[in-house]
Image (cartoon, rainbow, N blue to C red):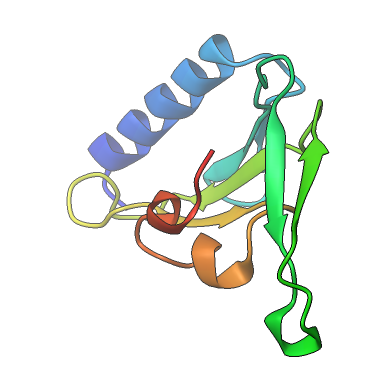
Length: 113
């Protein structure tokens, strides 16, 4: 790890800590990186429509009003040669996002909010 990479990593982590509240950004203790939790504010009367199971001949649409969703969680680690050579390693997780969606390069292409 070059001194310059280490300094830039520290600057970025300090910037994240100053941008996000303590409950939103947690800096990793063991390696350069951390976790960011983002809560979504839903508009009033936000609805989710669920399609019935065609295999069971239930083609009805079921509509639910949703007032809260669990947060999106972004875990990231900064490799030793970041930012000069490598990009951060990250995972996106969420209780309401399917694993296949979260592992896509752009998970929002198959998620309509």
